Amino acid sequence: MIDQKAIVKVLDRAAARSSAPASSKQTWFLAGLWAKSQNEVDYEDFLTDSSIALDRRMVSDLIELALGA
Image (cartoon, rainbow, N blue to C red; front, side, top):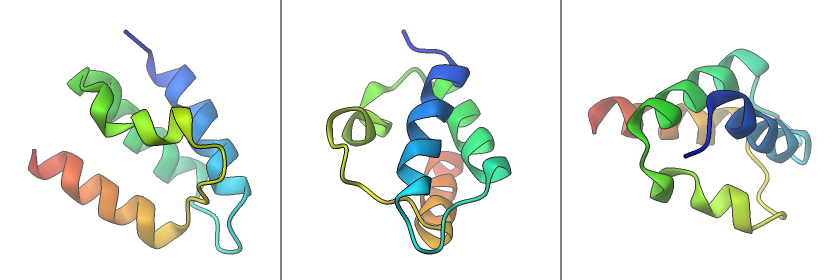
């Protein structure tokens, strides 16, 4: 089990690699959704692939997916 703070650290690093990075509010919100779901599949790619760049649009899409699940 991974908590919201740990997830957001990974997401923030991914956002820092983007030319249009996701905001800290976006990453915090998404991390909260993922932490509550306890479904590691949601964030597994970010934990294992250090080349993913998380931009604003991508995080918005991921939030929509998480809210719809």
